Length: 185
Image 1 (tube, one colour):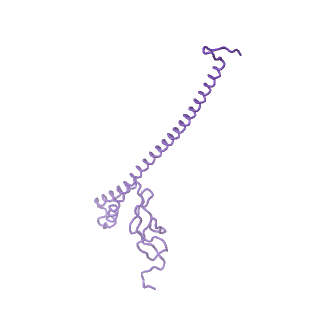
Image 2: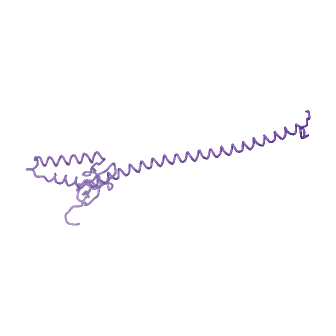
Image 3: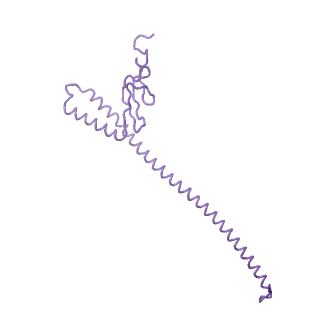
C-alpha cells in the first residue's frame, strides 16, 4: 500500500479506516433504531388488533342487548294481554245454547281467534297440561285430588310460553292416589 499524505499530513489509509469504522457504527445504530421501530410497530399492530376485536365484541353485545330488550318489551306486552284472552275464553265458554249461533257471539269468537293469532305470531304458545305428567317448571299445583299419581287431572288456568320461556305456568289439579275427599283414615 502506498502511503500518501493528506493535506493535514496524515496518511490516507488511516482516514479510510476511521471512515469505515464510523460507517459501521452508523449502520449498527441504524439497525438498532430499525429494530426498535419494528418492535414498536408490532406492539402497535397487536394493540390495534385487540382494539378491533374489542369493538367487534362490543357491537355484537349491543346487538344482543337490543334484541333482548325488544323481546322483553314484547314479553311484557303479551303478558299484560293474557288476562283479556282469559276473559274472552271464559265468556265464550259460558254462552248459553240459545245465544250460540248469534252474530255477536260469532264476532266475539272472531276477535278471540285474531288475538290468539297475533300473539302466536309473536311467539306465544299454550302449555299442554291436562293428562300430562306434573312438571313444576310448567305447572303450578294448586290442589291434589284423587287420580293417577303425578298426573295433571284438571287445568284451572292455561299456562303459556313466550319464545320457549315459561311466562305463566298452568294452574292445575294434580292426581294423587288415595287422596279422596272421604273421611280421613
